[in-house]
Length: 305
Image (cartoon, rainbow, N blue to C red; front, side):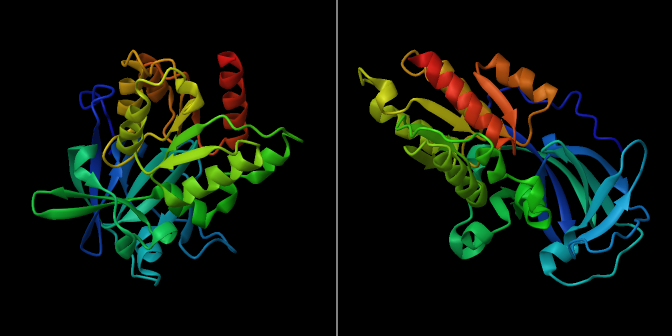
């Protein structure tokens, strides 16, 4: 069935998210509805040799070829029997279409990001963890999966590439303070490494928008705010406070609105771009375009001089 979002779109900046709940082996998981293109009954898949063990192969439902990831195998690490009633969640993020095999789709829940908590390292295993958040819906605990990390692990070439930084050539170091809100430990490490390599050595990272927003307040009365934070880079999907809500708070605040805000997310579609513009984002771009991100930071900081 096609995922028609008309009528369920949330107002921008409300710090709420719609999570599609599904099951694998009786456990409950979730994915942001904004990533979902459609749900369909599982289809025959053409095997592709030399692919990652969790990649079933490819299929072409209509106009495009889509890679199929066997999510039960990825999560359990073992080959499992496939069933006719299995479903494909066809996703669209990072400018890619990927289908994930699941067992059932339960429905859609509207949840505040404040009610989605980051799993601690005993559960998520740090940078190796696959859950980006835990939400309680009724008496069920739902693990929000880090689909970007899953894809980056299966196909590293689709993630942030340091070669894009190398292509920028020799660069001067900059001590302009760059603040970054990103919940994925893996992506935080990659972004930090890339920006440092590009010359931005004064980086402060936060696991969600709420912690960055709280930290901003210590400089509310500073006469030289940009010496403490010159630019904010934010993801969209984050526990506690998402990137749209963070951007709206910054741009609605007379003390902070001059800080440039760049939304750097796997979810930048035309629809999302309109939302970001409405709340005042200075720039928006899709992961994993790290070279483009550096160019945008250069441009926005140059405008501030």
